[in-house]
Image 1 (cartoon, helix red, strand yellow):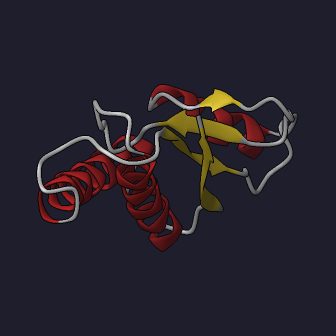
Image 2 (spheres, rainbow, N blue to C red):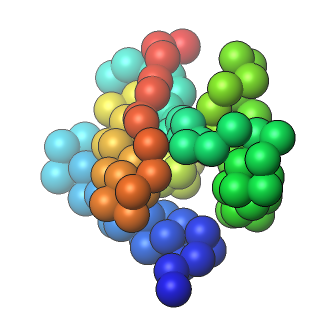
Length: 115
């Protein structure tokens, strides 16, 4: 049985690798161009007041997700752990992280905004 922790570990590892590859190959090792933020939002499949909904919420919280401002989703910011400001690198990490979560059946989406 795959746990939220297992999925997070795989997604984080792949997101970090993608960010590092993007930073080295596309940005040529320099934090340059547009800056901004990126995150992953997961929309639980079950209502929050049900037993399954509470378990889903607890699983997401255990790996660092926090309720988003709409109250409908759960977000994890900068999942690729990029320490710079380039939005493209952060988006790369968020998209890879979301794709891994989707592969496990979670409703995960990457989001971003310019600063």
